[in-house]
Length: 113
Image 1 (tube, helix red, strand yellow):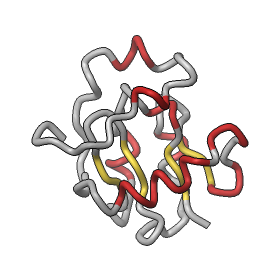
Image 2 (spheres, rainbow, N blue to C red):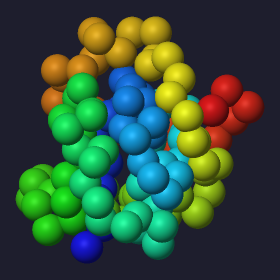
Image 3 (cartoon, rainbow, N blue to C red):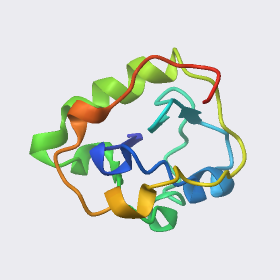
Image 4 (cartoon, rainbow, N blue to C red):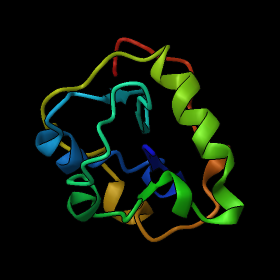
């Protein structure tokens, strides 16, 4: 089983999880992070580090966020690896408790990522 970043990360992009990942399986997009299921070793150290509580074990992803399993797998193939922590998005704290953010997911990777 792998771990999955869900919609709570959208428009926040805290990277506390990245700094503890022993295999560099996080990938960074414009306003969201994903986990590459091919690289994840299922250690789970990222879960308690996420301030947005956005990371779930694949088998525990909430029913209304199951599509993020496919989103993580697909976008991990398109986005670059992030292997060290960065500052979160400027207004991350304002977005962290907002739900139903999928419509804000920016999939096109730019030089800002």
